[in-house]
Length: 76
Image (cartoon, rainbow, N blue to C red; front, side, top):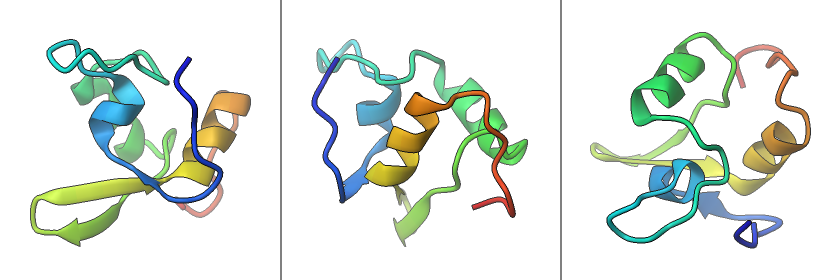
């Protein structure tokens, strides 16, 4: 498993992986399943850095990996 920073941001390919760039997934699901999980509040919402750039807090992804069955409170 790739090393996850304690703080900072992750782009989507760093989370779900990218075979073309040889990036191993932290959470092995498809892109569409990831966005559906966000809509259903199963996965954390991202932070928009620009019109086409969304990132996720490393600590939110770490919490998701440690407890994948937890439901987000308040749609974080």
